[in-house]
Structure formats: C-alpha cells, structure tokens
Length: 110
Image 1 (cartoon, one colour):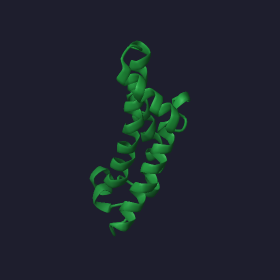
Image 2 (cartoon, rainbow, N blue to C red; image 1 turned 180 degrees about the horizontal axis):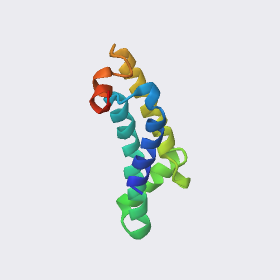
Image 3 (cartoon, one colour; image 1 turned 90 degrees about the horizontal axis):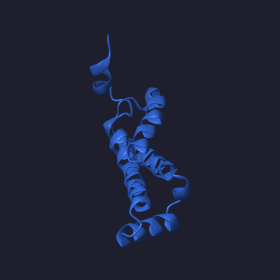
Image 4 (cartoon, one colour; image 1 turned 90 degrees about the vertical axis):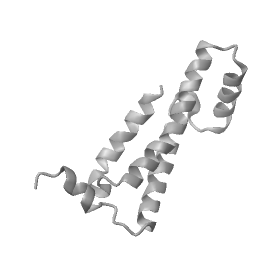
C-alpha cells in the first residue's frame, strides 16, 4: 500500500492542472504530505504479516488512534488535502504565480 496513495494523489493534481499548472512547490508539498500515511500503511501491512514485532504493533496502535480514516486505508486523504492547501498557500506567499509560465512553456508545443 505504499504506492497506492502516491499514485492517487497525482490524479487530483492532474485535474487541478488548469489552475496550478506544473508548480513544483504544490506538487512537492502534496506528495510529501501523502508520503507520511503511505509509509504508515506500508508498516500496517507489515504488522499483519509479522504481528510479533512490538515496534510495528505500537506504530499501528498509534496510527489507528490518532490518524483519521486509518482503519479503512483512506488516511492519505486528509494529508493530501493539507499538503495541497499548504502548498498552494506557500506558493501564493512566495509571490510567484500559481501557474508559472517557465514550467508551462517547457512541455508546450507552441
């Protein structure tokens, strides 16, 4: 389950492309924030395979208690939203436009 949240997060970023373009700040913060629950999901999968490891049991208990939607493996959604909103705010506060023309021109056919 490590790659699933990371692949899913690219779909909303692609849908929002007309608004955010290829802004690296937004992409990096969103993917980084999604990486946190992706790692926790991978550890959760390891815990089901190796239930005797007490470290994995503690991490699983912590995540089940404090991370919303962890029990249904949708815990990446709040992290994705926080990363998307946070990345957008950081990009706006940096003074650069959300759709940076330098990044857009690189892949265009014009």
